[in-house]
View 1 (cartoon, rainbow, N blue to C red):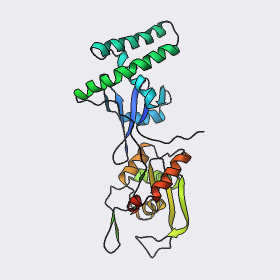
View 2 (view 1 turned 135 degrees about the horizontal axis):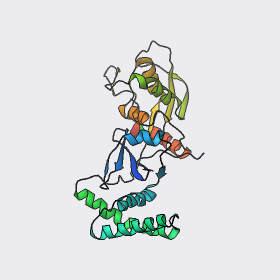
View 3 (view 1 turned 90 degrees about the vertical axis):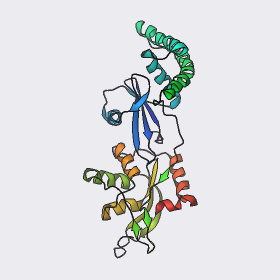
View 4 (view 1 turned 60 degrees about the vertical axis):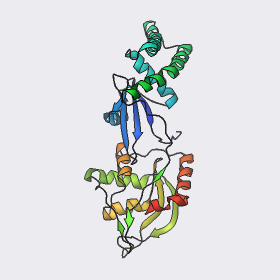
Length: 270
């Protein structure tokens, strides 16, 4: 199976409704979906629906294919005004004609809808912006981020952290997630436990990635041994993905190694 990096936003249709998974600034995940007015509103329930509702018609799309799906969703609802509405009526008419004739859209009809979508999409998005409503989340660069082990270190070298505790029901799935995610770097031996130096050296000298976050084996160790919560963004991201990592392609693994070795990011491993 070809692996695909889980970059965000991720675009879906759920029973023809446009749905987008969006990465939050902290590295977690939110979900927005198109409503009856054509704008996008927060709709977290679709995260579970898309993962578990196998009876629904669900399709993951590239942004280029998602835009025509959004515009057809708006066209079916008779949205827009003036020229935009007229274009939507043309798009809707093509689909209805095909349905009446009990046939799929022809290649030239699909091409026309895609072409019209390039005209309607920016116009309707501008209308939503003027109304103060959410439009289609655009593609954004998704650099890998390194999770810190601790938040800071005192002058005497004592590590400090101030994070929400991991929920009891999440602890074991999260530990498994942190341990089993693909390793992209590993060294021989083990490091000393910075919270209990008297313990035998058993902190793994490894780095893992899920395609969005990178973390050291120390993150797993300090949660397991001392209950130190990982960064909230990493915890939220893992929970939103039901503690399943999946495949991480070779290109992303190589990018993770470059990110780890980048001097400017060295402080992230505190």
